[in-house]
Length: 254
Image 1 (tube, rainbow, N blue to C red):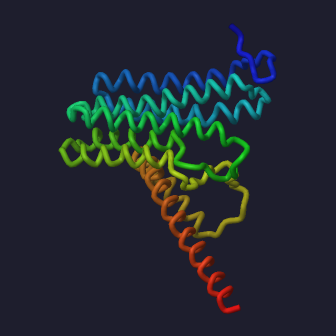
Image 2 (cartoon, rainbow, N blue to C red):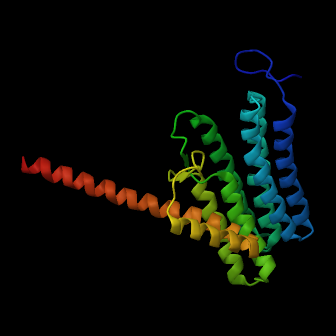
């Protein structure tokens, strides 16, 4: 059966962007399989590769003028597999299966919030500022969860405390996906803008650290991305509240 778009016409299927999307889905599926065998290092690498492929398919489709409703639907389904279902199962196979009902409920909450995040994203296309996402993007949420498990496995953190922190990380990522906090999308990030010399030096230091400790730096980026977004949101709320109080006081004086 051929895909049909909203206008009743057959939606075209293009090879290259859809292959990238299927590659991202394969990364998520591979991560699930590796989690069954307890290889959480491979899980982290597979999810990271899936994130790279997921970031490429849309750009390739736009550059080659091969975007289609079919590709958009496939991309959404791929995101659900790779960044919604896969992190939940990986976390469950990590240590949460040892916690009984709490373990599978926590992982289901993440999976459910991921599906809600994707559904809301699809309905808000063209209605919100492209510079920001409403809620934490599902790939970033997956990176927080799988990255934490990866770091625990790499550095041998296998205590009850690390498992409890893992639950907190999963719930934080899950509820961040369905919150109304704006997260910068980097869609309009421009490397051609003028920059100060100290910014160049700082970027060089980041590149050196990335070369020496790639996994730690990458995971630290996603943690900082989530935390800084919340901090900026709180600061903007306080500024808006202060402006509202000032206007209210000025109205009362008149």
